Length: 287
Ligand code: FES
Image (cartoon, rainbow, N blue to C red; front, side, top):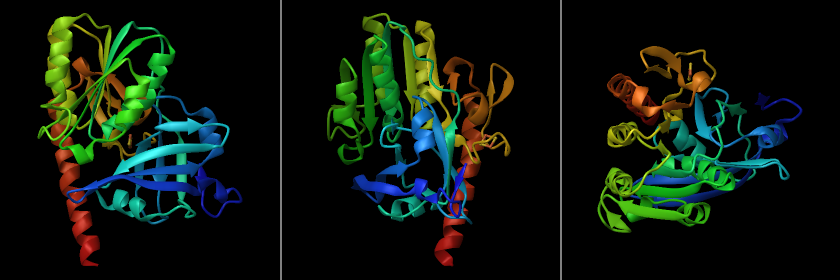
């Protein structure tokens, strides 16, 4: 772990910051951070846990891109709770308090054949490195990316470059096709045989993807890093039931076979955290 105050604190410097989008009170921020040790090792599917300030909480973020030569990693976060809002207020030249990683098992990259990657909302950022790695391994990659509305769509150009085909959808029809990613997924699976589906997005979306793929019997992986708290196997916050066994997303995942995940339990647990997060925001706003 790299911590502020250590003689290597310069390694947590924010090199670049950019808002990828700002719409309807939602902002998605892209940060490039100098963390050479992490940049040298990070692989597709892995994440870091960072603290913006010493007194703050830890948040997990997927490594969207790692540049071992420059020693930087790119992270993308959507302002959702107190800490992601704090992170979005940081600027180039500022330092983070701590960054731990790379964490989690890397995605198993091999030649599956025909692969569909499904990204919803900020989950698009998480499928991007996986799409690139699958493509480099010789797979035929189709990306399906979706957001609520046009302004919330991120990394479209990058996903198009990293895939053989890319289907873009918005819930309100303001860009691309109108509809949900699951509709496009269903159509593709009905037309052709695929060897793997890989999905990242809100939990209801990943659950819906799992329901769509089940009748086709196609292996479906989901990344559950959005539900973590400390990311180190200590807090139990990322507990998930997979094939009837208790697993921790941070150390056993973050990827799991979607057909084996107890989605109802996961949705219930996550809604508890959402309420707690709203409470924390209210307290800070009042203070
Ligand atoms: S995030 Fe705490 S145990 Fe996984």
